[in-house]
Length: 327
Image (tube, rainbow, N blue to C red; front, side):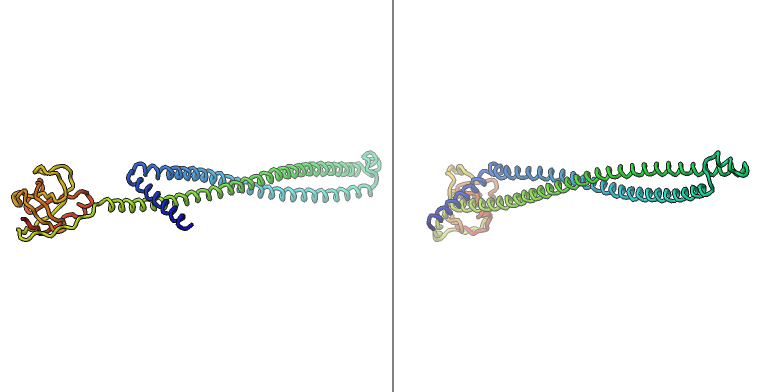
């Protein structure tokens, strides 16, 4: 079972490295493959954020409405208290008026007949009779006024109480609906925030995965280049004798033929013919044996240019000062 699992793991690794190498080899396709899902994820995150902002705006509006409804409820309670106090004052006034009226009526009845004609006929004088009739009329008017004012006040205050009770019920329903909407929007906003957080976590995970794949691709590319580079053959020892010359050695990897008509290849060296005649053979430390078979506009004086098959090898060589042996 372990060998089979190991084979599957190796196969998966090879497939991953192959895909990574393909992505590096084709940067356009790799970028599209990477940026496509990332763009979709970013678009989803953007839409989710817009939805979250809209929910926050609605939630703030409902909270403002709850605040205004709370202020209205406070004002309504104050009006109810004021109405109850006013009704209590009216009832106290009515009670006092009724007591006074009862005392006045009792006094009149204790004095005798309350009929105006009888009062006038039984009076000792006209003035006394008129005063008694005036008192009786005044008491009757006051009684009617007290009853009318008290009745109107009671009707008005009862109507105010009924109106305030209805307004209180409407306000309670509005408060309940606003609280329900506020809780619903708060739950929706919390869920949307969690969704946005999950999308951002996915973005971070995808970015980490992309960096991992790119690192694997670069590693695979480096290994591929190392495998493609031909192993350098060991340089043969320089022959005895010859003229030594210290030069600055550079490198080139251009294809084609040399100035002498020879095809380029390992061992072809570009020289300044006034310093090193064409056709001269030489030994270059670190490079091996070569032949002066090419020239160049930048090759002047004690400068030589060595040919390598790949740019990577040229980059490895760079520019060096070496002492060559010419035969």
